[in-house]
Amino acid sequence: MKIGALSAETGVSPRLLRYYEEQGLLTSYRADGGHRRYGTDAPVVVRRIRTLLAAGLPTKVIRDVLPCASGSGEVLDACTLDALRGRLTGLDEQLAELQATRQALAAILTATERAGDPADEPAGEPAGELVGAA
Image (cartoon, rainbow, N blue to C red):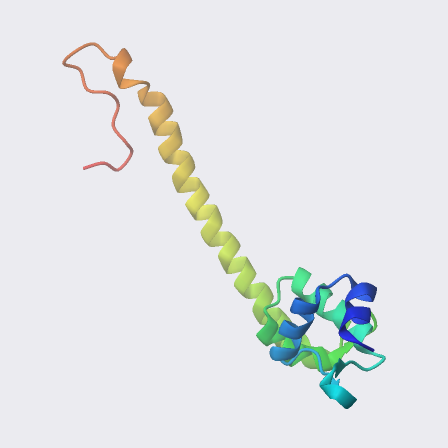
């Protein structure tokens, strides 16, 4: 299968298909004349790659777990469990950090809104202070 045909069938640009190949996710061979060709399983492999990318897995992890993929890529063999659990734990940690950051920003916003506009304060009286300001 030529790269253009694979692109048309999967909706993935030729440039991105070449990137997948550079990352070791997709394999091709060179036909006479040096043109890149993909095996008949390439559309399935590309769909698996897209499914795993959509789940937030980086290409390095996908390269490791792709040999364990079957079907559409939503079901993986048990050999991937450690990698998937590790990635899920990492996402949970990122979510916790984002939640803490959100709470800090919300506190600043609330304190700022309570303080009001300094232009509305009578002269000589300071506006409200930020929580934790020294």
